[in-house]
Length: 196
Image (cartoon, rainbow, N blue to C red; front, side, top):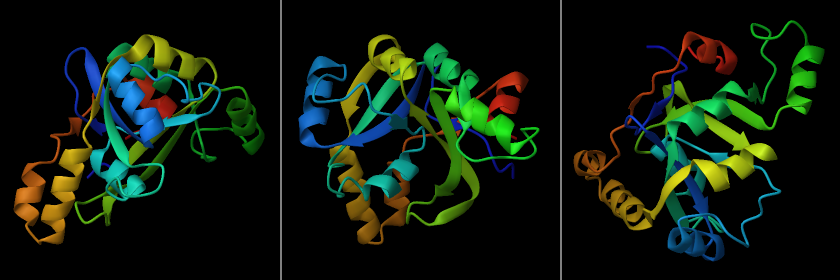
């Protein structure tokens, strides 16, 4: 199995990513279909195409400040702009000629990308990885103002799946997971993001 590929829910125009927030940010975002104050556009914000990685990060929407899980549909052109303009969060000698070259790119890039072990429905590590993308500066501005197509609060579904997992109804829980497929990226983008 290839270790680093983007898996996501997507169609011809959009890709779905996930974020988790407290009430004060999540509820206005859904109402306005856009992130508004107290969301801080000046801060880095991380988006994740993997539903189960979001469940791991938010503790099934139970961690403080992450009580609402949002499914955000983005324009694919915006998502791919982020990929094309990213820098890996960690130095990779197969992609950079030197540590200094990586540090220089990191310092001048407003999109961070990291590959983390994908999770199964019990939130245990799988043998392959999924991406997280950190947006800052102009990338956050594009995200908030240009890329978002819709924002849905999917917390009730998350809680339902988690309850089924706790009841050891794994098959039923799996049936409710979003259908994530390998997201197609060009050879150029594969090289930029370090994908297989």
